[in-house]
Length: 208
Image (cartoon, rainbow, N blue to C red; front, side, top):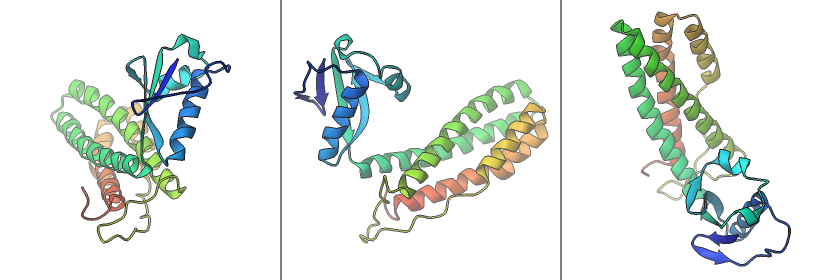
């Protein structure tokens, strides 16, 4: 297997017994020397997901033609994650408005379809939110500096997110459409707005 890091082929001990997982760890170790981290992986010219990476962990390297590891800096990665979270929050609030519109129009078929997609996106959003917050709190990522060169204190994230989602799922199970509409409008959407403000504060004032 050929190993490339950011476009450059890397010499490594191909005779040692290796798995795909150990090759990725080796690439991560080399990247860390330059204070960079693994951002995405391509196997034989195709980008793979984190799930596929886990599934391939024990695969012998002899079965793989080329592993191309793309790296980035921690600051660039956290900026990308924060921007993605802010944009996803706005998109989710738009989706919620569509669900509410269908519910209030009595179009349950459309509302159910939109709601399923919305809940899946909510799950993705809050996983991302938790990962970003915990990454910064643990010190894995540093807060972006503000334009004046000063770092900021980590703001407190919105509270009660898990409890709101629990009640939303309970209302859905009971087919309490009015209850769902109230939770989406009066609690979920405002909570998303709070998360957006939280991430914007983390991103740093004056930065885009």
